[in-house]
Amino acid sequence: MEFDKNKIRLKIAISKIKEENDIVVQNKTKNIFRIVSTAVAGIVLSTGIAFAGTKIYEKIWKEPKKIQIVTDIVTPEAQKENISEEEAKQIAINKLKEIGFNTNIVKTNHYKLVDSNKIMYRFITEDDYSISIDGQKATFFEIWNESKKLEQIDNKFFGYGSGKNVGSEYFMNKDKAIEVANKYYKLFGFKEGEYEVTKVSSFNSEGDEKAETGYKFDITYNKKYGDTYNPYEYVGIQVYAKDEILWMVRTENIPYDNNSTKITKEQAIQIALEIDKKVENKEITETKAEEMIVNMNAQAYYRLTDKEKFYKEMSTVDYPTEERVYYQMEDKIRNAWVVVITYVDDWEDVVTRYTRGQFSYFIDATTGEIIGGATMDYIYSTR
Image 1 (cartoon, rainbow, N blue to C red):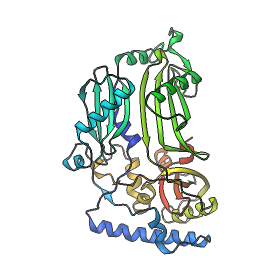
Image 2: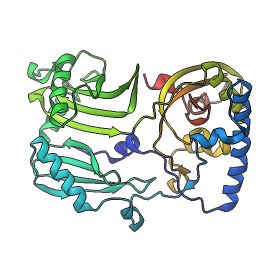
Image 3: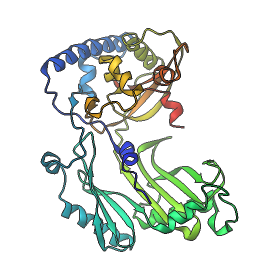
Image 4: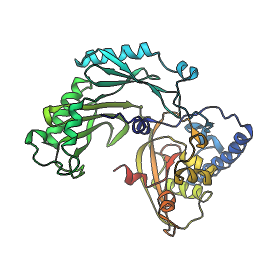
């Protein structure tokens, strides 16, 4: 089966911060952000929450600096930030032994993330399993079954007459899928109760992931904090009904700060609206907010400091990679208010409506800082 590295990168890539070489641009950025931080501090102060001056931004948010890492070549600089291939191989072998899989590695296929120095070490066994090790964290990341047998099963459910004349052994329902996934969950050493099943998606000829039956399933487990699940502490397991074959196991664990809620919903909306005035002059038709666990990012910051380039990147087909703006951000997961702003729908075309019709601000629930954002209804997109 084809290993889609780009798809994997999209799922695991998190913006990274490096030193900005252009001092002129850096100073300009600092001045702009200083104005913004002062404005937000004023907004928070007006709500009766005691923060002094720009100190609000020193609590969680650190001023981003652009980076120019746009290559997937493993450089000497990247190698210094990662374990060696031999060290990664030993971690892979130990994991394969732990789960009782074949440990005879016959091929390697490593790559570096395009916007950071992280190397993903990938090893292929003689029975067509590929296991990936995170070179920076020195931990198991995922394992895929790339055998031709699974490709043959997939072919039965695609193309003309797909899914017809297929025996019942090729199907299972959601309850059975969870049972099979739980078997692999335990096999890979995840503790009972440490994660909870949060999503079960089925694969079938109709493309209906909510169907009760399917020929393979994707089961997601997440860690829970109170009534909220952390989407960045998860285990993903995909299984086939036929012979209960494992397709994939992936895990990611970025710890959650579990910060307290001191900013009200109304205060968060007001903070977002005040900052948005500096970015967009469109009439606002709706605002909504929901408390969620989010990963800090530079989207709101980039949009604020260079709106035209921000949207040009999004709406331009084959925008040059070397001209894209990248930021490195600390892996920090926070409790935040996600405030979604919807603008009046009088956009010129579908592309503009899609990219600029809404914007979601991430407002830290403890400090009131703007710690990220998304060019969409982020609340809806996570459902």
